[in-house]
Length: 113
Length: 114
Image (cartoon, rainbow over all chains, first blue to last red):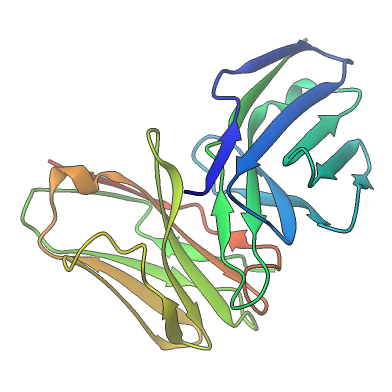
């Protein structure tokens, strides 16, 4: 069955460092992958989308990579700030049909001042 | 710009009662999604509407759950009768033209069934 794995343990990093979050998947051939941020008591907020034919995408301090051979996406936040502390969800979408999106369970990031 | 609006934000009710959750999507979005989020299972898709028509309801747990979208600006998710295992946060999201577009989420309804 399709499986999306994100590190369930919280990631603690020092302010100013680069945070790297991992999203691995099995039994899936996604056409695209999205990353969302979720703060406590709030709904997820879209950050970035990367398609299967793209290796890397950047937006300000954010960078996403997508390796369809390794079946993995890496999400980087450079020069991390305490305000970046949140849970980050990856979501995979298929091709054809209505392109259903399936979410991972998320990784909690804590940036320590 | 108004985002996705959900009501109520919190609902506490007793087992066996009917629960109705409401959602107003972003104007102009033609896709609407209902999700359930729990610590154990994460964010699960319950049902997807496109142009007010249910396209995929394979995630609806059982017949106790039903969803409607009578028009482009309103949707409901109903649980009848409710059970303690239905306790979760329920999110509504909308997007332009299906799942490959960014989804805009409401802030959810935290449901507790006693």
